[in-house]
Length: 195
Image (cartoon, rainbow, N blue to C red; front, top):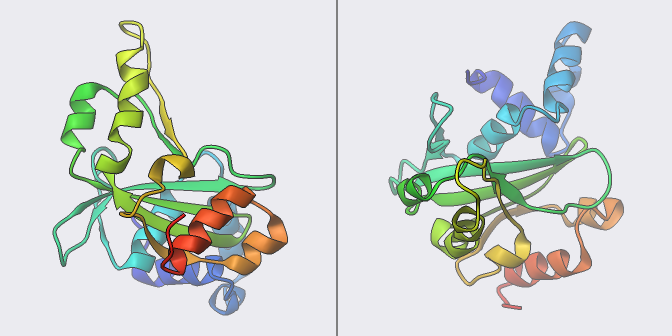
C-alpha cells in the first residue's frame, strides 16, 4: 500500500528536517506516523520517501522493482537502511536471491538510502551491473536449498557510475553514522572528484 501524496510529502519533509506539516497534525496521527517511520521491520515508508524525493513512480507490487523513472523507463530497486544509533555496516542486501532472480534484475538501477533516527542522510544510485559480481558470489557458494542473502556496501558501489542525489553532511558530521572512508567517498564524488 502506498501513502497518499499528501502524507508522503509530510513524511519526506519530516526526514529532510522540516516538521511543520507533521506538527500541525493531531497527536494520534503523529503517534501513528512516528511508529511507522521508526519501525526497523518495515522499510515501506523509507522506500516511498526515497522514490518520492527522486520523482520516481512507485509500484504497488511488493516483489520485483520498487519503482520506475518515467523519463527514462529504468526500473529502480530501492534499498533503504534505517539506524537508531551507531554506524552503518552493510549498505543493503537482497533476501532469498537466486541467479535467475539476479538475471531478471540485471538492468535495474539500485537506489540506496540511509535514514538515521529522524534524518535522511543520503540517497545514492548506481546500475545493478556495478555490484552484480559481488551479489553472485554468495549464491554460487551456497549449499543447495539454503536461503541466500546477498549484502553490499559502499566499497562495492564506489564507481564512476555512482550518482549522489542527496547528502546531509551536517547529520553525518554530528551523528558519525558512516565510516570516515564512506564519508570520503561520498563527499569526493559529490564534489565531482573520484577517490
